[in-house]
Length: 191
Image 1: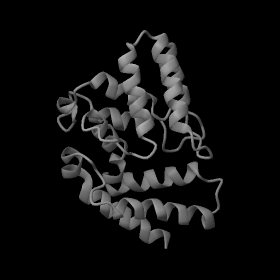
Image 2 (image 1 turned 60 degrees about the vertical axis):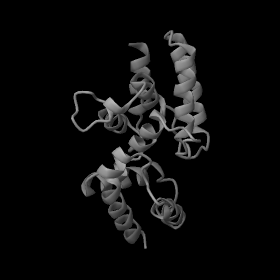
Image 3 (image 1 turned 180 degrees about the vertical axis):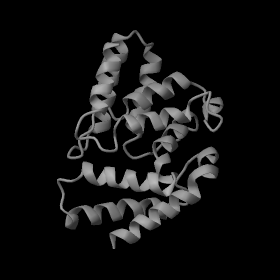
Image 4 (image 1 turned 45 degrees about the vertical axis):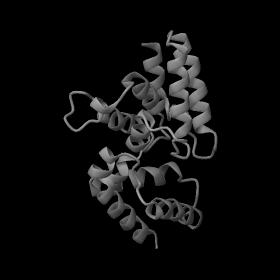
C-alpha cells in the first residue's frame, strides 16, 4: 500500500497534465486480460510489463533529460524493497530506460509491446489525441510558443518520417493509420 500510495502521489502531481494516472491506466488497459483488445495473450512476462508501466514515468520533469534513468533507479529501490526477483528488476529497468528514445536495441519480445503501448495515444480517437497534445503543451508551458512549436514540430516530423510508428503488428494494425492522421493534423495546427 505504501508503494502504491507513492506511485499515485507521483502521477497525481499538479504539474502533470499528460504523464499522469490516466496515462498509466491507458497503458495498463493494453495488458488487461479481461480486455478483448489487449495484447495480454501476446506477452511473455506480464508482471515485468506491468511493473515497467507503473514505474516508467514515476519521475517526470520536462526540464530534465534523465527522467527515465531516474525512474529506473526508483523502480530498483522500490522493487528490491518489495522482494521482487533481481532478474525481473533488471528487465523492468531496461524497459523503463528504453522508453527514453523508444528503441528496443534488438529486443523482439515484450519490450516492443511496451514501447508501442507507450505511444498508443498517438493512434487514439482525435478528441483523445487533442487532449493528449494539450496536456503535453501544459507540461511544457514554461516555454513560449516560439520555442515550443519548433521542438514539437521536430518530434511530430520524426514520427511521420518513420516507416512505421509502431513496432509490432498488433499495434500497427490497430493504430498506425489514425496515428498518422493525428500527427499530420497537429503539425498543420502548429504552422
